Amino acid sequence: MSRPTFMNALDAPKIGGISQRIRLFPKDRTFWMYQGTFLLLVGLAQVIQIFLWREEKPFNLVGTFVWLSLFTLGVLYFRAHYQKYRWQHLKTGRLMGLSFGYALGVALLVTLLTLAILVPLFWSEKFVSEALTEANTSLTEQLMQMFVGNFLATALFASAWIFVYLGISNTRRARQAEVDNLKLAISLKEARLASLSNQLNPHFLFNSLNNIRFMIHENPEHADHTITAFSEILRYSLESGRNEKVTLAEELAIVERYIEVVSLQLEERLDFRLQIPEALQSCLIPPMSLQLLVENAIKHGIDQLRERSVLEVVAEDLGQQLRITVKNPVPNTQCDPLQSTGTGLKNIQLRLSLLYGDAAHLKADKVNTEFVVTMILPKETS
Image (cartoon, rainbow, N blue to C red):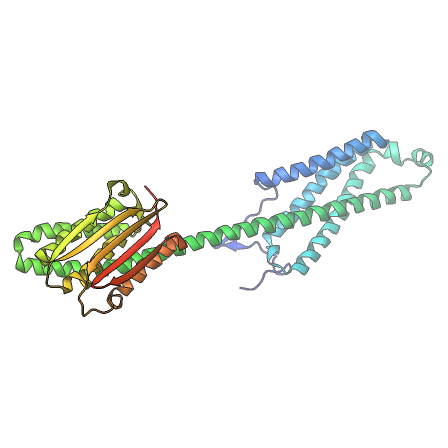
């Protein structure tokens, strides 16, 4: 996209195929608050000077009112051109040149219009020969003096107004950019979390369907119960992708349903022990995190053993943190359980990092023939 310039910006910019309408009198209350404050201060300063030090009070009061009105229109036109032609995209040097040139143009136009209004109104009082003779000046000198004084004052005020406006506009635009970047970062974070959650679901789906397939042939009388349990687990896994966190009680309910399903296949080989204080069940954790840890413990540990094995899940209150530990035995021949479970654990670790930063972590260790996974995260309650 080419950079807009003053020369090629004769047409109003289009957004989504619709011409952008720029209002000469904006509806922005903040703008009018600043503009009104500026006009009030300038007007009060002029009125005070008129009543304390200047003569010809009616002439100066009317002149002040006319000047403020024309000056306001002039700076409003600058604002409209700035937005309509997107001067914010210009290089700094060109923008400064245009702004200063516009200030001089506004000063010239406002001064000429002010004189064109005041001279006819006060001709008999200020510009006739008797008044000029009394003031010891000529008509040309009088008009030139008024023109130069008003032009310089207007140019100064217009330049100050324009550069203050540019500064405020740049600040507001920078803040809006920060907000937009933050919204984008949050959207990307949510999308990444959803993607990570969805990465868990196929793994879980495959194992559950495989268990049901075996149970249909080996124990048909439990098939209906198993399918019902599996449907609850599947519904939870699909809905949990919409939430960053769920309560520990919600996660435990699905873990217990999962244990019901796999227990029909493992029979007496699985001894599931749950040590979760009721006071901690309202704590929040990432959805499917505990379920995946239990699933990995069964698939890569207990399912590889022939003897009865204990799968233990423990939750502990560490004050400001919640610690969840999953312990399970592993075969002696399995030297490094992380080779098979590493992907799932890294997945959970990444989700913890996205949700909590450095305040949460996941640790996996093999102690003798026992595999221990510890998940520590900030204690939050629903």
